[in-house]
Image 1 (tube, helix red, strand yellow):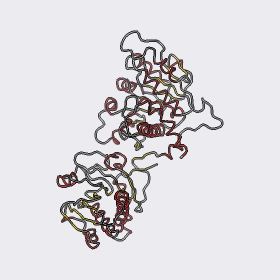
Image 2 (cartoon, helix red, strand yellow):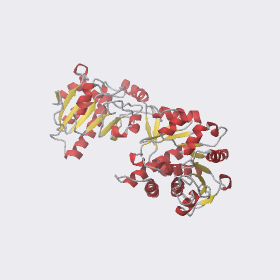
Image 3 (cartoon, one colour):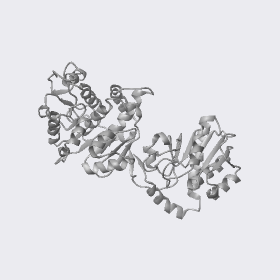
Image 4 (spheres, helix red, strand yellow):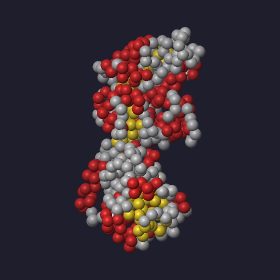
Length: 482
């Protein structure tokens, strides 16, 4: 599991080292790691370091010092290093001396560099780049390596309020920060440099493939279709049978346990009908292994429920949702179920079993209000107020438990933004709940597999929800094999 630490926690961890080490030693550690990454980038991109040109964009803070010392280390590898000082009177004095002694130069503007180092601002900065820095960055065509965090991007929220650096690589000093999870497009590839910090659990976390392999249900010699978890699905209708097909299909592909579908077999006689039969007919045609019933109360024993995609928002749907929630089993709610919940907030009253909600931004706003700039804070507050695990979908999905623990899904991508993709995620979360995973683990593992499957299904081109679902077993095979 990766941990992302608030800037205040990082500064607190740095304090004892700063007191114990010689002046500037911690900065030199960071700079040495930064120089190493830059040198490797030059090798990978240009074939070597000698004679290559690197430009440092140097602000007035410690990040400027990191960049200057890194420039001095690069000069020792034969790199031509030039520094643009955005605040010459406040440039880090020791760093500037080190650069100039090594043969680096101060220039007014970049001169066709092979690589640029962003040392404009550090983790204490807020807001967009100032005009001079923004103009400088706008004119750069070379790849940028950001020192610790990309300048102009909010370190705590990942929000970009205006002009900002878009880095090819970000070199994190000592610890990952929230921006590294929340703003992947601005950070690029993340390289973590160890500078000797001792930190505990981060304020934000991310599951990795090792977590998936440890948590994902795998059948043992004593397991059967019941012991691996039975999921009940309430989804789809005569207008949207595809939602039921996608949700049940993802659940089937997630684990070897049973899936039950509770939906009417009656055909619609009026209204918008997009399928010649019922949603139940569509589900059984696509997935004959599903055990189908006409109603929630007739579905048989289940360990968890997944409800919402395409189920409708009329009074009959509200009654069906109420009967699901009254069973007080672990439940994931999405799509229409969230709309019904926003209209009837009392539906969750009295529940003791875990509930997972999977809204996109619009559904989130209907439930608790606009997301705002700080997605982590918004999801944490919603989870506490609703006493539910809340998964806010997005390019970076953010998940919060009622106890305040927050996870970011760093495997997500924009390829998952396609109709029906959320239905697939609902089936994955539901099946993991039925298999006995804790709600935060179920949501985080499902989100990661969903993101990996979307990337695999896309392969760099447009994809669709059915392909994402079909990619799930291949992703799981690779993850479980390590």
